Length: 447
Image (cartoon, rainbow, N blue to C red; front, side, top):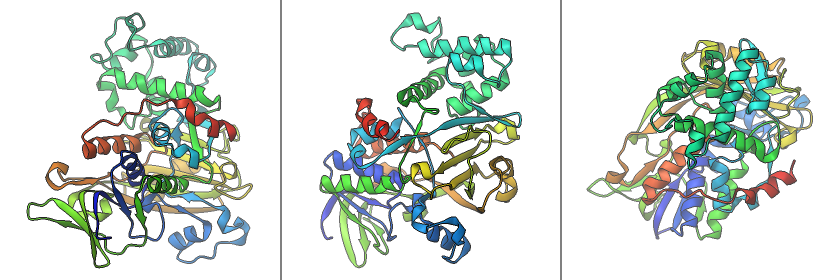
């Protein structure tokens, strides 16, 4: 281990593994270590026995739930947008050859006490029970404007400079009511709260276009895809990629202490009495706890069921977003469901998550609105974890620390953190202009 590396990565969570893969592809010499004897860190995937041990203290789940090894329960479950950043990274690094993705059946939104399919284009807007007749017509016009919008074609701009006008101003031009704005902003554009309304509209419109383009990609019921056997496959796929490019992975490395020189710059990592030298350290917040601060907490309920979430058209895999206003909260709540159709549970079993940014100290009460939508559950585990973000200046100490995973059940915020970290580590932007059709074979093949 007494070698010098360009980068030492600590922790095998999703973010760290993606960065390790990207840096390896850039021909940097990477050493990747984890104190645990398994991949994934916070975002690991558990079988049924492991799930029981973690939340119930023993590894004897009831036999009625089926075989332990048929379960792959992701602790940080997130769907990937078919045309989104994660898929672009998978293509850019050629990790697609190690993974099989399958389209997710449904994308829904909670509105006035009911679950509705998210309308994503002008045709669906006209059919949606979310809106009355006149509002449908206004929404249809807005969807057509977004679909036709082309940054390089001034004719499609309808006199609006989206880098200057706010999202609220664009929406008001079409006269959409608060109810419509709620599902468009949170379930289509995937904004986490309503602050986007006062920001330039370009980001909002681009996010709507990403949703529609992702939906069109696989002609499924949602814009999302998910790996067969769950996200536990991702860290291992990136580990294989890193090895192809000469990267080294080491699990079960006790200690993993970052060493600093007199000026406070990271110069290496010591584990089990040996020190590996490096120019930069990349890690999750748990490895440098004195350089991070707590910014919040995620509450989650993990459920095992023998049926799909009611009112989701019997979707075997689905995301339901509960916008903050609908629940009188400051942030959205998310439902995630996956099943045997993605090989994450035995036949006839469904895994559902309810997640939200904690606003109280009582996860059971706080998540009740989401849990109530699931119908009867066979087993339920309540849990919460703290969220951290770095407080250090990377230029001063050569340490690049990821932010903890948030409550969202899609990958957009995770990828935003990864791309920002990549730029800070390498000093260049991450170029994700790739041929998206390169990933369609595996996804289509699993349809």
